[in-house]
Amino acid sequence: MTSLRNIERNLFKILIVSFIVILISANSFAHLNAQATYNEAQNKIIEAYKSILYAEENGGNITNLANMLNEAVQLLDMGNYYSKINSTLASKYYNEAYLIAENVSNQAPNVAKEGMINQRNAMIFFIFQISLLIVIGYLLYRYLPALYWELWYRTHKNWKIFRLKSNKRKAENKGSSYKVDEQIAIFALIVVIIIGGFLVSNYFLANLNKNPYSSLGILGPNGKIGDYPKNLKLGQNFTLYLYVENEEGHIMYYQVLVKIGNATSIVNQTNYLNVPPIATYSFILLNHQNETRKITLAINVTGENIKLIFELWAYSVNQNSFKYINIWDQLFVNVTA
Image 1 (cartoon, helix red, strand yellow):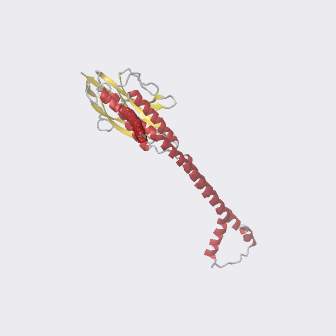
Image 2: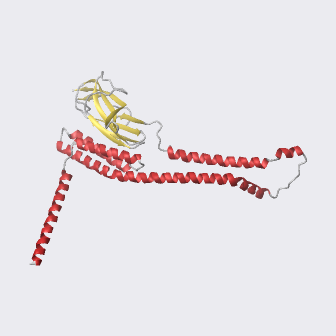
Image 3: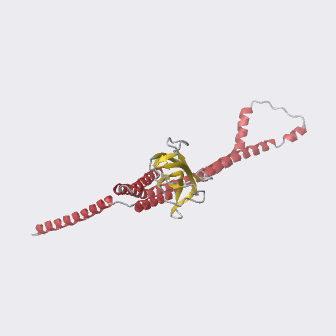
């Protein structure tokens, strides 16, 4: 009777454990197969970008994370492109972008922690270098003159010595050895100061960008400046290349908005064209990094001297939105039916 009860209890426990496992598996499966929307993927990418920015500020090596997130923003652009053509394919791209950005967000804290450790170690090593330099400077100041005279004696001990007859000459040479000692000590201190200045500047100014800037360039179908399309048919596909460069001193999240204007459309360093873009291209670029990307466009309006405008925007953490950063480019094309 007792053994039967034990069997019943064990079966009951097995059923409970199996039920819990099934629930966990079902939730995980549902999560993996959930289709993210554009806004969800975009918000997750922005969250990942902020986490990478924090890791970079703390000295982390964010190269791999930046490359992963750059892939995510390109998938987001693909989803945006197919959103009006194939919603199923668009959702697939959104979901892939979401999962990559989520992975980046999960890895970024560990990268930030490693960066903090590296920064601490760098500070300790810097203090050690300065302390060692001070000790070496003191030893040189204290003992270098004596060492100099010791070496001088060893190299000149076979010289013959003659007595000077002129008392005036003796007076002029009196104390000359002390002047040499001072010159040697001063020279040693100058060398130490120069090395110290180099160490300090290398530690504090190595990653300083004095003139931060971003660049946007439009290249022709051959990937070079020139040979731009001038006469197009309505809806005809044509190829260009976007060149974006980051010299801002930190990782940047860029968007290039492609817009269509006319002869009266005004775009300058303060005003962007207030019309919906016909295409958006996103870039995650590290400091000192650039990318040239092939794009395919089509214009669905006809006219002469149509302005094809390219505006460079960047995500602002302070404003929590993308901001026009006063950089643009434009091409003039004729489009006929």
